[in-house]
Length: 290
Image (cartoon, rainbow, N blue to C red; front, top):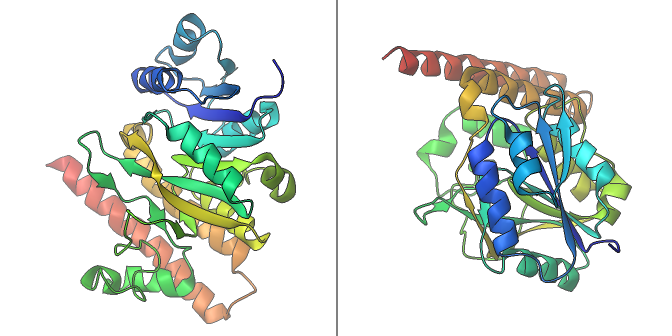
C-alpha cells in the first residue's frame, strides 16, 4: 500500500473488550482515504494481543513482552507510522460517523494547526471535560488553594482545569486530552517523540507544550466527536495512577520551570504538588475502606 494519509496509534493495556469496540468503530466508520492502525499492546494479561491478531489481521500489532508505559508505547507506534497525519487514540474510545474525515479535513484547512483534540462524550451522550490549560505556577496555586473550585466560572482562577470552557465552540487551546490527539508527521519530526521521562502521565502535556513552543497552534474542534468510556486502564491501578500523576506534574516542573522562575515560588509549587498527592491518596484509601 502507498503511504497512508493517516496512522492511528493505540497503546493498550488490559482493556481487550474496549479495544475490540474501538477497532470495530474505526472500521465501521473508516477514513475515506488510505489509513493504517497500529496497536501497541503493553503485555496485557487479558489476551488483547491475541484478539487483535485473530479478529483484526489488517492491524499492525506491536506486542511488548513488558509494560513499557504510555510514552514509550506511543513512540514505538510513531516510529512505525507512515501517515501524513498521526492520531493518538485511547483504546477505551469509539469514533463516530465522519470523525476521522472531519479531523483530517480540519488539519488540511488549517496548516497552522500542529494538533487538534475532539469533543469527548460519555456513552450516555453527556459532554466530558477534556480541555485544560498548562499547569503554570499561577494556575496550579489557584487549584491547590481551592479558589478555582470556589469560582468555577472565573477564567482567571480556572486557567488549568478550565471549568468554564464552552465545548460547543472551536477554540485554540493548550492541551486537549490525548485520548484523541491528531498531529502531523511534520510536527513529530520537528519537536521529537514523547519524553519517556513521563512514562504514564504528563507526557502529552509536555508534548503539547513543546508543540506550542515550536510555533504551532492547537485547537479544540467540536465537530470532531468520539465516545470515551474513560480511564479504563488507570482505574485498574488507582493508587498507582494517583502517584504517577503527581510525579508526572513534578517532572513537568523540573523540566520547564526549575531555574526559570523564582526559587521560592518553585519550591512552593513542588510542595503543593506533593501535598495534593498525599491528600488524594488519603481520600482514595478512605473511600476504599468504606
